[in-house]
Image (cartoon, rainbow, N blue to C red; front, side, top):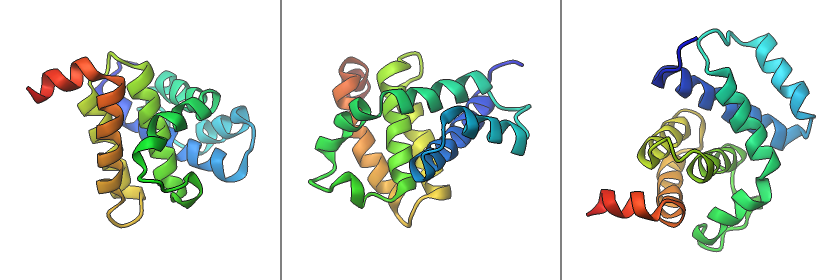
Length: 147
């Protein structure tokens, strides 16, 4: 399958849902991933990217949380709604590990998912936090885009 913006978007969509499920029930990653492949039409999904996001977030959760925690305005992780937390972790993973994906794309995709699945106005919060994370993790790219 050819990797396109659409197949990547669908990968992010399903990865966010898988991360959410993992956060909520703690089932093993391979079980959740198998359920997604069984229960969803993955023919138009970049499944390698889905796998990378899902497993990458799970493997690096603490380090990812540390990247955005300073930007939560002293809001503890436990107070974040689970969808927002999943989106912040996923997008932070991309910002940290996928420098081939422009930071604006990462943020835009996360904001769109927050609009679709998050609490009311969570997209504004996600946008604000990720903008600060991008400034930290992608300073050169971020500053070049701002000048």
